[in-house]
Length: 178
Image (cartoon, rainbow, N blue to C red):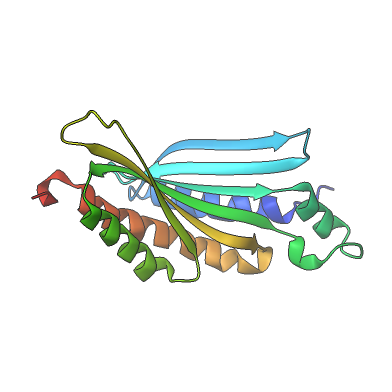
């Protein structure tokens, strides 16, 4: 009989939590990918979604490398703390080029996710556009392996992602621009 890995179990939990939000109409799932890299013996999964009337997109990515699977299956040979997956969150939005928005975004992430997470903002823009519109990608990296013992945290993470999107949407919504 097939015994699912930590990656499989965690993927099902986060996917189920997000599809529950989709079924209730709170979000709309826009993309889903599930990859197996046979050359590196790794797996990755990502799921993207938006608020129904929003322009902010969120994406959760999970990746499990060979060492993570080996730590799970060969627990006598490798440290058990390596069993699990890397989780990264990204939020994509477009806004006018104002440093006040970048500070407001940083504050949103610190308020919701805390200071222990690595939060980065990267921007892309056409320098010839007037007014300049910025494509901002905010990445939240946990910088550690998430294991099966944090399953409840994955469900809570889905809630936090939706809350983050709602607050980001308030920054980019045209009626809130002055």
